[in-house]
Length: 283
Image 1: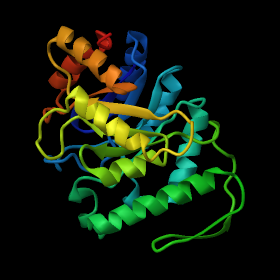
Image 2: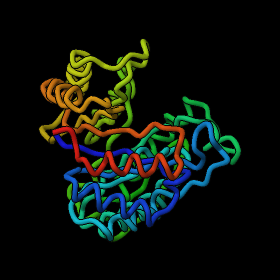
Image 3: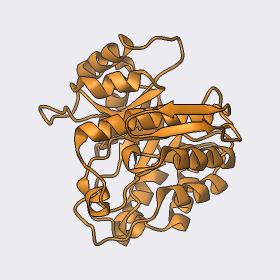
């Protein structure tokens, strides 16, 4: 099991230098991944300042040596996939091959509607699928063309290719027991699995995680490794977290990623979160 952090980019966290300091401390404390929210507005608090995650990740890449990093999760339907291709390859080189690309539909309308972007879930799903195909094609370094409903590419070659081979790993968001997102993730390199059951609202049991992994595996077509990352709101009881890690590992999870869900992104909450990170992962 690897251990990561899912970090806010709003309020007291909206400073790329502070985030880089935090990432360096997380790496020293033994964490394996440092991932940032990709949002224009903080849900529920549109008045708060927000830092662009890709700018902050560049700063983090220069301050760390080992941790995986990425934006979790990029709402690809509101981005131009060719621009994302350029940005992600640059960050892959800057981090010496440590980038994970996390993608999703986008989960709140403030990132879409005020800018004239549709929030229709069907259209966002179409744009996500097409965008991933375009992104993967442009990463290939060869002349690439694509004719889709939302995107058209005509004989384009973007160099350099990513540092990682065969590509920068792509993880997709998904929640059990919703089937379609899990099917989509199965075509790529990993899933960022919500640990709340999308029907009951309860935390996923290890049995449910095992069922989700088994379902994904029915759609996998190759022998390449596939990551199952759980976004976990950690317990204040460290012993309880350690036991849950073991149960999720046995169910097929490969990453435990602690999600900071607090709406109190103040200086006080930042320092409290920093102390928790310094204590290291629940190993």
